[in-house]
Image (cartoon, rainbow, N blue to C red; front, side, top):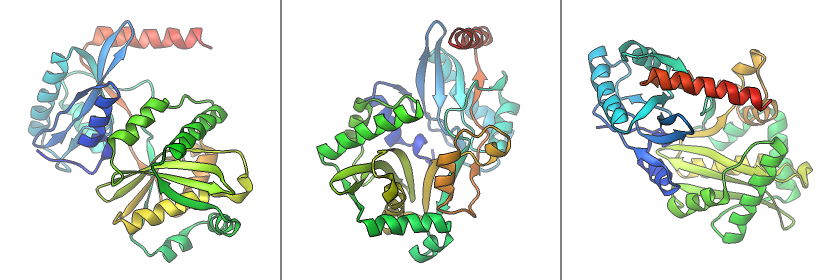
Length: 321
């Protein structure tokens, strides 16, 4: 058996998933990691979602090895009566290998779950060099926030956790998206120790302007969730907040800082609705290219039910226009 640096394939992540009521499937084989959760679709049944996986231990696994590992995954999936397995291959080679060695169809899922472009920067350089590599405007905004007296700190105090929940909700309202529940985040803080998970807060003149959750896992810092206020936006608190998170990560032995999803490549394809957040993140290292992933795919175990599922999605889309 082997393990991975991918947080969404970690035992810690699936302990959290079980705590929030998900049924986990912890498949860790000799040459493949395929931990997942059972998701339910009304009128259709269940599917197995393997986030950021499966992951092969070898860069180029043999067809025989892939087939053997796949058989074990499919056997467990069928025992759980799932209709398809939703996967997120780490690269095109993994995707092609799965398509080649799976006896059924592997098709593009109706939508991607995890971002297809991740913006991950190298933080092994000196802090001075990291700052020097930023866009001048990003560097200016960091210094402006410092000059204006924005304070950044980590905390687990209840009042700051409540402020974080409130900011997440306000941010979701502005962006017209559905946020995780307060209970979800309460479980986050209850389950993950401070060595793994930190809440960073940006405060200005006694007002909480922004707050982010960062994960620190096997040498990588991950900016996972955050929220910001529309008050005092001129003091540029989110810029200083990210910079202090990078500094903290570097000081605690991390070599990479993961900003999460961006739309750099997709913007050139005319599908960019992430313009603002992409410009914000890439400003911290404009010469860094995003890491690209194939996206989300479905390995179909029950073709009839999968076809029914696709039809239901089309009908729901039509009637919710």
